[in-house]
Amino acid sequence: MKSIALPYPQPLRDALIRRFQWEILFGIENAELAAARNEQTHIAGCVYRSLACVAQIVFALNERYLIDEKGALWKQRGYR
Image (cartoon, rainbow, N blue to C red; front, side):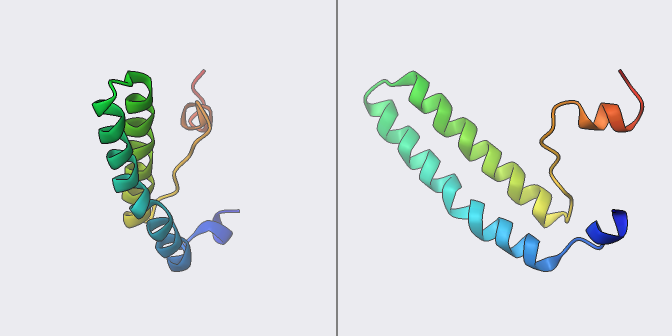
C-alpha cells in the first residue's frame, strides 16, 4: 500500500489545490453576506468550510495525505 501512495502524486497535489483554493474566498464572502443578516449559524458553517479547505491545501502543499477518519492516527500507533 505504501508503495502506491509514495511518492505523493503531483497531479493529486495540483488537483487538490485547484479544487479547494477558490472555495476559501467563496466561503468568506458568503460569511460576510450572512453577517450582514446576523445569521450566526450560517457564518459558522462558512468559516468551518473555509478552514477545512485551507487544511486541504496546506496538506497538499506539504505533500501529505489528510486523514479524515476520526482516531485513525491513534489507532495506527496502537493507542486506544
